[in-house]
Length: 216
Image (cartoon, rainbow, N blue to C red):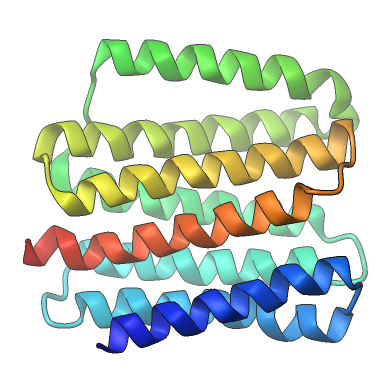
């Protein structure tokens, strides 16, 4: 019941956050962007409270660093590097959560598939990244590893929670790729809708993975 209420509230908050980008309302953005992430944090906390584990704590810490990234990226001054570093550390914590609960997985067809995807992403982005080439390369490398280990975990455990984490990690990758396209290559109107909706959905799926990993 509590998780359902938090989910509905987070969805409403996410709607107003996305809306704030299109009506150019900084006040609404400053309220609803962090609020949505905070609500998702409490979803993960509620989901994992009964079966507290290292997995839950790593996920919670990753969401807190994502919140820091939210704040840096919405500031009036350009804090892109600070936001990038915050999300980079969040991804490392998510990777730690996935690995600590199932070990490091190595499935060659999955590595090949993600390798091709990585090459495509970098081919699209790197020529336009300018001085940000190295940070973008490092960031994309880490988030690809996060998606890789999330799906390796699902292949190993075959649990609902692992599947949710895999979906969440993939949505995070889509969100960040769209953000990078919008920032470095070409601005487009629907970018904020895609970036924010997939971002919040990714955190929601990852937060729910805490519940379904240890209950079902």
